[in-house]
Length: 330
Image 1 (tube, rainbow, N blue to C red):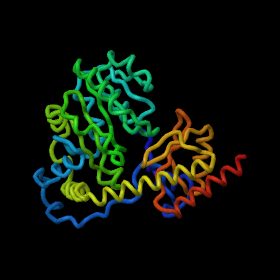
Image 2 (image 1 turned 45 degrees about the vertical axis):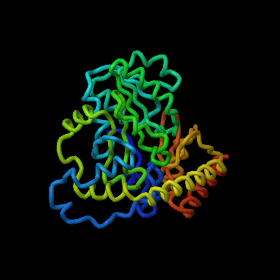
Image 3 (image 1 turned 90 degrees about the vertical axis):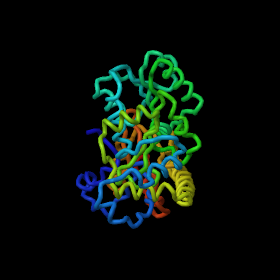
Image 4 (image 1 turned 180 degrees about the horizontal axis):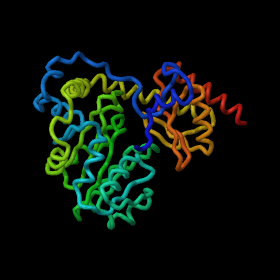
């Protein structure tokens, strides 16, 4: 299994700090989960049905013509490589590691690329995949550039796969509305923006033949009845969407200020996390963990990703720990 954020139970065991005393900033999930509504008992007692309004709500929210709900976008990440004959797959790196892992495991040849290398390599690729905004760096590739890449790939029967797991805060940049075009596949995560990663829900936008093949691979009833009910309730609540966008933006700006004042100006990020390249990333990660603050460590390059604190008290706790590190490491 690849390394991921959110491994709080392991940190509890490793550092001997009780779970309730931790500040977990290790994942890019909004720290304000949508209130779980009352779910009708039939959602628990009956097999899930697709006529419950979830797809309709999702199409409106994502501005998509057709889509497929999946058990978290991770389900699609693992299944999509099985829908193509083995070929050359370019990955904009650094990248969410599960993408490359899934394509390599399915027998494809993986080519890791920097942004400025894509145009020179694109005509030798069968698939190009990227996360936009990127995880973990927050890098955002403009729509015009993505569409130009897609046109070159699609002309040869290739795919552009865009994982938009962190784009809800800037949804105007999404490609979902265009994903009926051959060769364009867009993944969306539900849990990050709504703060409900535990429900395991995501959506895939693509031309119908790709969605049909993906649905056949994944099988029936991939989304539980209660998850479908909860997902629909979240997706139709436009006021909650606006409040979450504003709150994420406010706390993201505040996090940037805290990091910068501690000598850790972010190298990138988005409204759900900030990314800091830091030579002392391993030492700082351990220093914070010893104080019950968990952040995400990356080795290549040495870097840390900081999720959003949920309130000013948590923000001050992080700030004090960073300033302490600054003093002891001077």
